[in-house]
Image 1: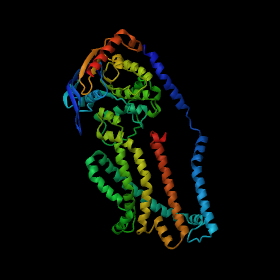
Image 2: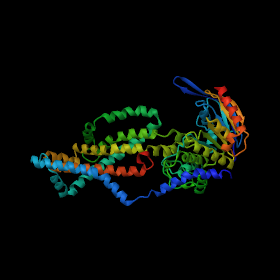
Image 3: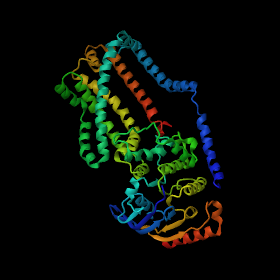
Image 4: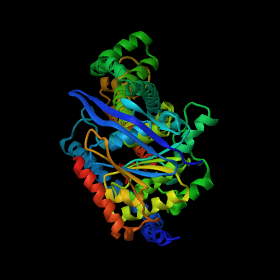
Length: 283
Length: 269
């Protein structure tokens, strides 16, 4: 066949590309060095902050009920870790439950709003109204309705987490490459197929961006709700120890909350990297 | 599947706009016989892409009708008779080359046996392994089946799009400036490849382009549209030996066709 020669000509760059891609092997030493390069700058910054804090307390001779030294906070933490783990678990559990409920409701609503401008027009003002109402103003109400159990905490976390998921969901489900949508329609794909195979995967970068905002917010919501009546949780721990001027405990609880936030954020980064390996932000 | 015929009867189209309607196609009638390669050329904005979208069932014409083997485009679409290649590859970036090529088969299975309802967006199992392999071989991408699209060049991505359109062996292939975004060298190679594929199993091809040279090189027949609103101003049967490569472009016959069709475009403008 006369086309044989042309077939060879055009396949040449392809083979080169294939060889290059195969040559990209993962080197464990490189990975470790990469991790160290990632972790070192923030760790160094943390050490500097803690050292400055410590130096200030030592030089100024600040009383512990005003600003405890880092070692006092560490001592308090390691003295009764099970106490902090128990309360952290209570707060975290409520925050995640709230995120799941609020985020889930937001996504269902986002699907409906992305499909119909009418639904968007009628529901969005209500969504804005809920969003702009300070959650601290509503939280006491939930305590009146549901008492001192987990319900008001989950409700506050859900209420605060749902808006970023809603906004990102609407944009995400709409942000579909028009040509890809045309192709799906040209092969007579149903609305369900277009959603599952095109809209949902296209929206993942937006949904994960939404989670990045909603996740810390849900923890804030759970902690704030504990302020208005609770027997457990880090928010409750902070409230009581603050009243007792037991600042090492306040600081220890704050440190635990910070650690929870950092760990959840890291977990989200890992999920993002594996689920969105195809996305341009991960290249 | 054998090739199928396409017939357009007095197709006109206007887009509704805020400042009145935009008349893009004016009474276009044309026929493509089974197995024929027909190109539609015209200046940009003359409605040639819209014409192809009407034939593909993506747009309802304002007037007139399109018949694919005597049936409405939407019906032909449902019977998986129409393979569409767009100017951009429009591949799904989260799917490998193979999964992209198999997408139409997954979608089409719904009509056969697959229960409707949520489907996992990242299917692990391919539809028909051997067939996909042969298709990728055909477009010269056999070694790249597990690659994500972003690691391929523009020309390779467009070849994946062609393999995807061929995956369900449609008797009709609609191509909307498929090589428009490619560099000259890749475009030459793709033109030859397309002729090879077309020669392999005589599909009916409707090919939209703004390049008169490309149209003559590929087609049995070239249809020239006027500027907006597009109407057919000239038709030329291209009687040149196949396969046609760059050497043909220097022949006196080729240049005569080029002269004729460019003249028709000029008169229309």
